Image (tube, rainbow, N blue to C red; front, side, top):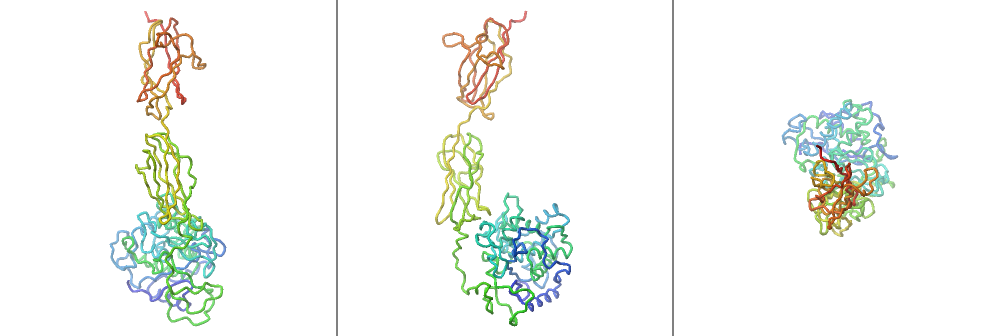
Length: 558
């Protein structure tokens, strides 16, 4: 790593002397100055869903980061096409960098007056999560494992009782900051965005989180090209002067130059690479109070217990041994349930209107995100998911739900099942009954438009052919009833006029017939009696498809 300052900045652990030394060092390295004098001491411009006691998007959760190197990147500039060279700290993982720039472009089109620079998002992302743990994200920009802050239980940080049932953070007692930009769930509920266009708002997705952070920073009438507004925005994100100075230093550093590095090869903050954004906090004395004992010459590492005994109201001293690797009950898979799937029925060849939807819950009963669920079509059927797949594996969203792809019915009719399975150690299965019904004709149409005429006492020269179809596809074995009627308004059987002949050659004016394999039906020959006039033949199916055909009986012209 390039030359860096010799200590970390950390809320609740830096003394006044350390902060002063850091500011002096920043000034010496041409880092940004202290907050603008016009910056509000308690900025609340961003109207997020922030519970009482909290004044920041992150719930004032802890942050751990190295300050930027004293030297500047080798190649100043802001192009995404910069080569992979220069200081390792100047490298930003490709997907993370793309998310920041996409958020900047999105805000430029919807809130141009804000003038959000992507380098500000990069600075906050660096401080909050080490650029999503050095870019450990998948192709869609979602972190491979959740990034969680400590429980906001009032012991050193804000007291925020659970607002999401553990859906985002797996904690149904207190909220925790979530994702690469460390939003508390209640704020995410208001400011969450879909930055990658997948139809979901996921705080663990860097595209979604970057766009949400941008909108939060741009709240109200802020113009981030103005120092005072930028300071207010950062303070609204995490209400700490030291935090502002740290973000400002990275902001200035990234403005002087960055380069893109492959995902997963960035330089994460040391404490953001273990599955949470930081270890449990140490108590934070008021900013204006003086320490009861002189500060130590150097700040202890983040994992070392405090040198002095914490106040009685603070958390207990962190253990010196590593925490157990067994996941907490609140973030382990517990159950799988139907999440409102309706009746699964479709006509052969059609797509099912309903889609299978399930919800995963943790051991505490709260919705569980990022759980793999395998959907399968089971039984003697040729029905398949989109793409012709019989089995599909998907992951639950922040609310614990996941919806299977669209099912398309095959030609084989009858019942079958769709199953959803989750859980490796103890699998849970939810089964859904589905069925495919045969096509039923919804239309009857003629195959030609010839005029049907006959002389009195003669047979009609043209034979009538019709087609029974469902959405344009011929339906075989469809029963069609042909009835000679008086007229279209009062379609009662007619006792005179054109007629068919039965097997004995006697006149009949009602017949029931069936279509062939292609849905086609050619009617028997029709005969005229001695009465001239215009008559009508009504054709109907059991499903209600109807066709009326005009028959004319008239003497030949001279």
